[in-house]
Length: 598
Image 1 (cartoon, rainbow, N blue to C red):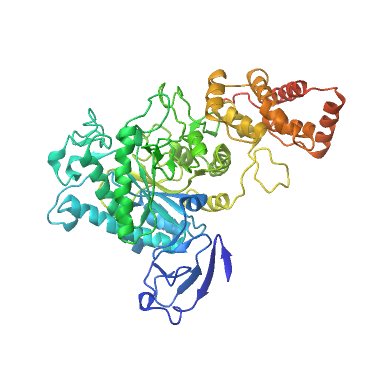
Image 2 (image 1 turned 120 degrees about the vertical axis):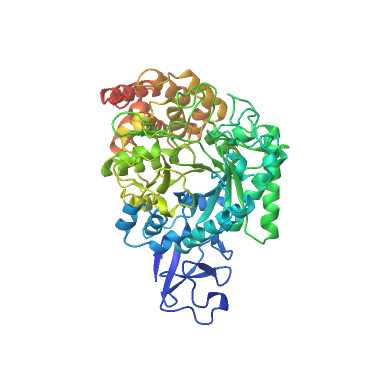
């Protein structure tokens, strides 16, 4: 017996003696529950090679997988994105990983990656951003309803295969900001089903943004697709670009969905939860994409938030992710990405992922940046990015990229074109970010097993330090500076008012330690909150030295340094303000925050 991740495995030579008829023969690529705690599966697809295991606490076996609440599943998240576009039959072709990667077999690539890690969440295993094309000779294309059913059955096979490899995997899917007239059971509802003025939003005049805020038919359309998702095994559903489909509560002020839009989403959620209960399925969770919250009649409807987070280059081979703020050039002057902050107050988990939706191959979105970097830099990027973003909010989950569909694919150095013969429909040139071919499957496993990071961890610490040069570049961005200073000095996340005020007061790029950075740090150190916290400690001087060192120099002082500076503070030879000035001058001499050349 051996321990692998969270799951206790016991390899047996044949099916468990005395098992019920449902598991006789051990169906290939299936996970079947023996009872509420134990499952059995066939690993190799043969009747004589089976495996039995126990669901880890706090999960239970629901007949499909080991399930817990959304927070548990997001604790070890990986990104298998858009495998719904592939026929499940591709799994029958899997061979050596190098051959599968070269052929662009995304399902096989995922299958091989599970040799390294068994994640507990899979993002976007089913979405409705496809267009029905009637073909009466194909039963799946006889009607929009038949099309949904076939897609559901295809995704069910894929999800079952993935859960057989990762028993705690929760599958998610997206009800997207896309409608095609051809997908409607009643095409005469077009364009009334659309957000006013959105006809042709996705190129074709038959496409638009569904109006969840104002159209009952749009809500029922979401319900119909949502039932297909749930039947396939999806247990976490996100609403794509919820502020487009549901309207904005206060444009440019908050990313909350409008009240009318929230009531529309509430209707969809209630219908789908009732359906899941009637079918005796396990709990289904819901959340908005690119919005902080869905508040209907004073009640938050979201169980999680899917953040709209992106990466940008800043210097050679660095990926930068600020907490996006109003006025940031990536989003424009009126977009306020505040999900990370609001969710902390509400206790809602946030999912952050690597963007792969740039339709222009010349724009290096997240996946293209990763695919184009040499392997050592790619690994360094993933490590630093994972540790950096996890610092923003303990509830934030960074989706570790495994295999992802990429539109209009520029393969970079390690990506490959997707196998066109395995696509469910011909959706044009597409590619695969292959974790096997890109050499990141094993590093993904290491990151998922890692302790919570500390960018100033001393040698021998159980936490993983972030490279100081890389971290200094992140801290040039006001969003990141404010977030880190609150954590390092006040030991908490910034409140919304304090965060917004500080970000607006700081320059757009804080490229030195002295000046605005040092002044802001001392504002927090001199605050009544800090003074009260420090006075309650057993050694206020030591707390102050550590806070200033971590927030400015980005390292935790060793014992000798700590004793030295504590003695200077205790003797009156230094004040906290003078110590901060010394640390800021040292950081500037080291050029810790100086912009790196591109």
